[in-house]
Image: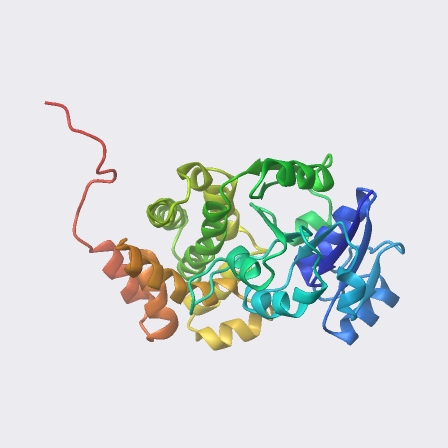
Length: 337
C-alpha cells in the first residue's frame, strides 16, 4: 500500500483518488477551496463534477497542502493546466529529493511553449516527474468503467512502479518513455476537439467528424515528430485514442464548448456555459506558435485560432479548409511507374 497525495479535487483528481483508494492506497486529496473540501468531507460526493459517485469514508480531504504532500510515496498533480506552474511553485519546498509527481492534466504554456512536465521540472528540479495520459474521461473512471491509459516516465523503474499503483481490473495501464509525445498528443487533441464540436454545432455529420479526427491527428503527429516525439505515441492511446474520445464524447468539455460556438455563441459565452476549464482554448495559441516555430503546417489548428480569437465565422473557416490547394494524402508514398 502506498501513501498518496492528490493535488486537485476536480473531476479528474477525484476520479483518480477513488481509483487509488479502491486499489488499497491511503489517499489524501488537496483542494484550494475550503467550500469544496467541506462538501467532499461531509457529503462524500462531488455534487457538481461526479454526481452519483460515492466517496468512501477512508479518503481524506484538506486545504493544507503540506498535509497532502509531505511524506507521500507519490503525488498526483490534477489541477487545470493554467494552474500547473503556480501550484508546482507552491509545492517546491515541500518536495523531497526523488519524490514522484504524476501530472495528469494536459496543456502547453502559451508564453514558454513548455509542456506541463517541463514546467513542473523547472519549478521542482528535485522531483521525479511522470505523466498519465490516454482516452480517460473522469466521469467514466469514477464509475469504474473499463479504461486504458499510458504512464510516461524518465525511467522504466518509475513507470513500472506507477503502473502497479494505478492498474486494476477496470483500469489498464501501459508504460512509455516518450513523455514529450504523450503530452503533445494530449494537449493538441483538445484544439482539434474544439473544431469537432464546432462542426457538430453547425449540424455537420459523421463524414466531417471523421475528416477532422483523421486530418487532426496528421497535424498533431507532424508537429510532434518534428519536436522529437515518437510516431508511436500519436498512433496509440495518447494520440489517436485520446483524440477520438475527446472529439466524440458527451463528456468532453472541449467538444461541448466547440458545439456551443458552432451554434453561434462566443468563446467566452461557451466557456461560461460549460462551467469547467476548457483546456483547448488555452492550448490553441501555444499550438499555433509551435507550428510557426518548427515550420509545420497546421491548417485545422490555425482555423480554430481564427475562430477563437479573431472572430472568424466558423462556416467560413470550414470553407477555407475545404478549398485549400489539392494535394496527396501521404507525400511519402511513391507512385508506381
